Image 1 (cartoon, helix red, strand yellow):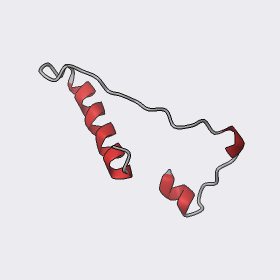
Image 2 (cartoon, one colour):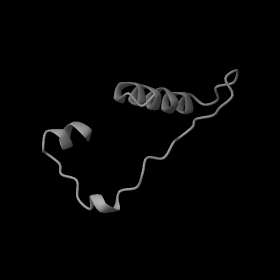
Image 3 (cartoon, one colour):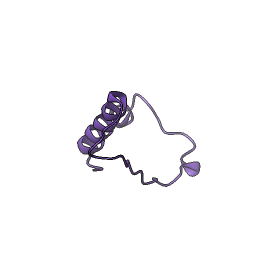
Length: 55
C-alpha cells in the first residue's frame, strides 16, 4: 500500500483523524514454537517490518 500511495494510485483521506503508530510485540516460547501457522505469521511480520525499516 505504501508504494501505491507514493506513486499516486491511492490517496490518503481523513488525515486529520489518523492515529499515531502503535508498538506491537510478538511473544512466544522460543523452545516450543507451537503451530506452524503461528511461526509462519511471525516470520511474515518480521520480514515485512525488516523490509520497511521498522524492525
